[in-house]
Picture 1 (cartoon, rainbow, N blue to C red):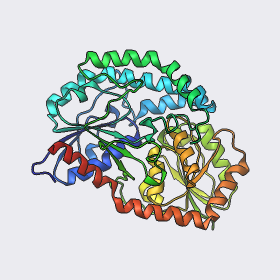
Picture 2: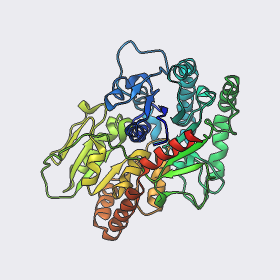
Picture 3: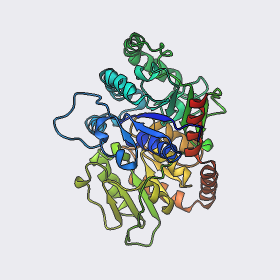
Picture 4: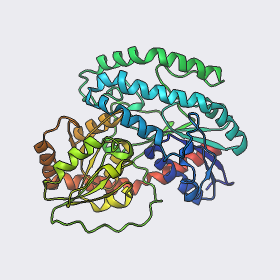
Length: 424
């Protein structure tokens, strides 16, 4: 710990991945004797306090009349836009990516006065933001600002790497067309947002970027999947090979009938809201000899599992992953990095945002298989499962990568960086 206890204000995006990442880092800092306060979105009320943190929460929109589940806004958004996920990533720029940015911008504008009041009350020594959008109050607080990227690191752009959200291959095919379409669909929105950010007293944003870099910058991604050779980063950036929270309670694996391998299936708290897709995948898995643990998500009551499965609305992912042989995932950055952290190969079914980038990188680097989420044939999924389970060389390589990642201890490295930037 630094000489004196710090007050550290975290502001994560209102989704489980970024919030869990901040919980993991914040827990290390709290146990080092620092005061950790979360300026999370209001639907997280009580959930962070139960883990030992202070809460000083914000509304990103007018408060709902009824109490909402944590991250409910994004669950509803994903459910309502699910038909768009059947489109190409190029088409999604206008029908998925742009509306997400619009919703994020609306939230940033709405909560700006609240954030200023929170900063005045909390008086942080350092501010940590795990989000993709700028909140000017965080930049004008007069204390060190730490940016955390817990999405795929293509979010930090460069000419030698594929554009973010594209899921395009590393050979450059389609990059120029995708970037041009991103400019066409996002330029006007970005210009208006940048003007507002400057009006609030914050620095102008880099061209077509929606967030500033920090005094220190952290990103969560395993070195074995990283793009550092194609897009080197300056000394302000620190890679966390993983950031796996240690706050999940104990868990006893259920007794699932069958003799096959144990597989974990999760489309994340957002992707699992696509009940039709969940049912499709479950139907295919039911006809295999393997056993499955299923994260059913917010609409769990609408999802029926087969006899070779056990699942629940929420499952303690960090306790389950060490016990399974394979992961079937949507490719969210949290699940992707945790799977590699625990040395598990993946079948990836991407839906939106950076999930396509993670899916492509997992396949390019030989850590799993990317499938067409809505277009795969049954035998493609079952074949991918069998190939990955039976590839002893791959399994040994992934397990060795996991051992090295666990040794590097990303949580404590992140805490060290935050303490250092506050001290400096």
